[in-house]
Length: 323
Ligand code: BDR
Ligand code: CA
Image 1: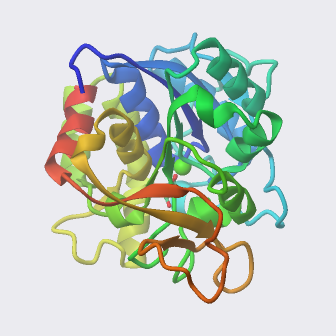
Image 2: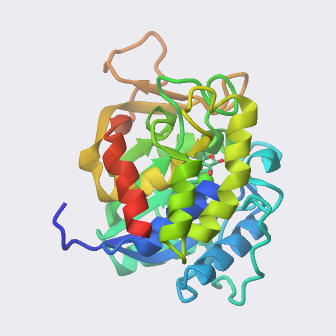
């Protein structure tokens, strides 16, 4: 990346403790111009996601950054319960963020994405870190949208490692598997940042303490909200092999990928997301380009998915940008 390049970002988000980390990075990084946040149900209801998005931006000094409210439920399936045991009842680790002063845009999320993509054709990195419902709706309303973006980076799915909400499914893809499968039916300049890589970049209690000390604006909010998330990791056993209590920074890793794709190793192939049944939400990829007996992977474009990353570079980018 040229050091002077400025990336225009829209984050589609369901804040969410690690979503707040992604938003902080987008606000703090000198090479990111945050055009707006679009919200979606997921970690919390869409109304609470919008409230959190507005309040987080105000806490970070970005009150003027637009927030557009999106989908309240998945395209087809019945909504799943919100995971309050992961992100707290308020989605932010029960830290009681102040009520926001600002309001969401009149445009909904899908229309906001389309409007911005038309205004800045070929320049926007859309980073989707919640269920893909808004992205599928935007694609439905404007089938040319993929041609108007610089890139689409999706935090979701798990290729080679187990899921985090079922043995095979990751939370964002299970949140709306029909939307995810629709999105990958067409060609985008897209990269999937799934659990295969996001589980490798860990933030420990000591990192969060350091952030709190070094970054008055971002560190305090992230330190307080991450306590609940880190406790969840500890109680479920996800942190069993960690040297100290910690958590993954899933959504922030996707923002880093938008900026520094050179730190990520990818594979490519036609993607299908299982829509229902016992494997609902599973990310599948025809990496070998075979013609299989079953033709579910025929006639679709290839998509890239990350399988490895430079852990230290990604983590330092996050921490140093906030400080
Ligand atoms: C993803 O699910 C959500 O709980 C997180 O915010 C992240 O986007 C990780 O599976
Ligand atoms: Ca999220």
